[in-house]
Length: 306
Image (cartoon, rainbow, N blue to C red; front, side, top):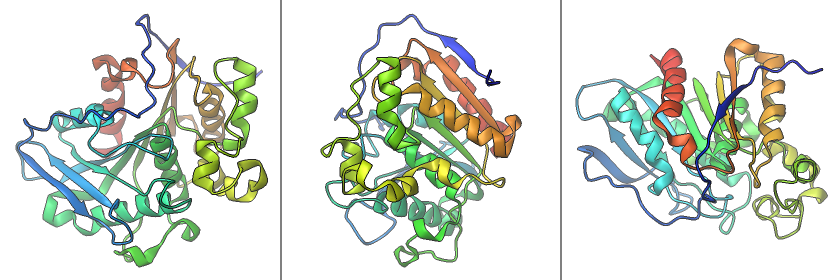
């Protein structure tokens, strides 16, 4: 029998499907210190980020870099996915929310190249924006969690960096990762969805979001798919991970996070990896954003970044 440390979080609220296609933007009117649409690289107009600082203090502030989801096809750095991350302002964090190239513009590894370029930009510009360059965490949901986890495990892997995008003297390593229901092994997803019966096993189809971001039907390019899987790069110097996933997720099967957790634990140890399964919760939802759950997230980050 597998030995897995899992915390089940009960939820009785009614699920409303969240596929991160919402267009509603966050309300930024009460944030005093912010800088919007800053260019962090010059390959695409998509390569922009927004910065939010706590109302008070001179820093340097630990940084949460927010990576939005949307199937690698849509989503925005200022849409409602940012709401839970912005709660970090009240905990003394600077929040940096990034856009990156979507699959309609460029295929993998463009998206992870962008994420790593943004991390390097944050470090290079730390003094100007009151960041603490050594205290950076990544936090993403769904596709954004894949990119957060991938950046977290791949560190300075040259194959996923494009140093021509700037700040080549900086490392893209980070101190912590919050992974909300992210896919971590694309080729297993259909089999896992069949096992659970929670969703349609269509991830391997030629027109799937995964095939589009990889540039070809994923079953035809297993080596390239492996490059996009965070579990491919796990090493003992990876940062701590907090992974949270709903047990009824019809989009990204829960087994993705369970298996990723187990592989991380084998290398990093249980003290550096935490898995929370939210009982009865589907893909995203307000259950992730309750005060109780956000306290879990910020307690995790506080232990590492403060």
